[in-house]
Image 1 (cartoon, helix red, strand yellow):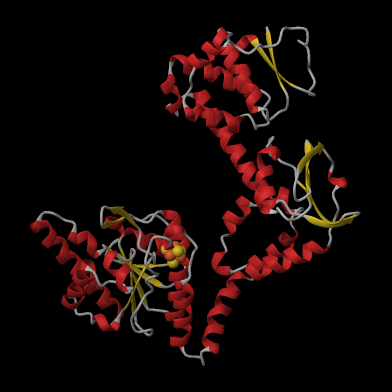
Image 2 (cartoon, rainbow, N blue to C red; image 1 turned 90 degrees about the vertical axis):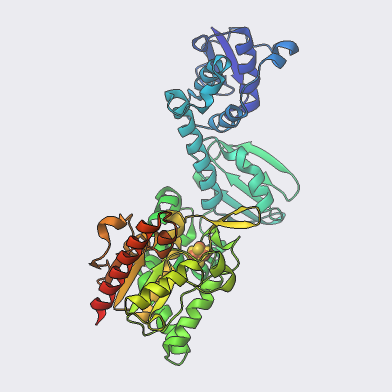
Length: 463
Ligand code: SF4
């Protein structure tokens, strides 16, 4: 047997050097014992340690970059077999370099899951660690206690140094403690929870901050609970407020509209304008970045019908108005043929920023994904709560998903009145841009007539 000794549980450089030396020698994976300094089970202490290989052999041995990145993460995992598993994959990669792309390989897949778990743990430490304020001889100091799942504390040190550069702080964990004095980072031994201070004035600061930034528009309880496991709640003063804030969220949404109504003299136009102005600054999903502007809905606020499209197109993005491009013009024509006055309906989109892919000077429409649709649903819900249309019509699959919260097969659901989750009436049909994309003119004509028929059904529903 060969013994490879590592300086610490997160010693990636040590593992890499030892693994490379062993692989160059051709030592099989089952002939290597991986040991971490200071850890028990030193049964093979008398065995020779791995010596670095000669330089020419080193140069001759290369692995894909993807493997190195994977190994950097996996080495931080708490599984004791991680070093051996990585070494096994390394040996196989020498003969089968493309194995690194084979997601079906059980070992490759297992290591990827381990890497993901490590990355999640790194994120949790950044998101859920909270400092308490203490005073020592040198003055103000901030101390935090955290229990990571994996060996990620050193890997996160640079983040906390950058984030809290001007504060004197200590992060205590069971394995190691980190100390920053505004100039130098030092390490100490592991600690226990009792070593960290309990509640103190900084909790009030966090609570005030958290309550002030809490916006029901951003409330996603499922994601919140997934992202914020209860294990960490005891370290986070603001979580004392979560139940109360969640319970009051729906009431707050209504209150926001009521407030907007009352602060605008009770008129719906003022409330709608306030909503539109708030949407203009929305950053809930990344789509706001490349787009020119938020394209909010428009039309009479007492409209009986609200039409919901997918998202603004190139021309809408520039004009800042919905349904003014080619699809909008076809929509206007079809409405007219169906006997619906365009000026009498409210039109808006499920997603309020233009998603596109640049191609040369052109911006090519890109379909919004489920996360973007869900992020933007809040605005549609506000528009519907404010306008209370008698019928909401989803044009296409994106709008249907936004209204129903689930994937909808348009061909199966189109053309009939549905009861939406909030008890109001909905109707699903195709998006006019679908008609524009049909290359065959005969079929395009047929589909257009079907669309007009759907719109006649819409008209008949509200008369
Ligand atoms: S697409 Fe919707 S959710 Fe995303 S930034 Fe724009 S308005 Fe906000």
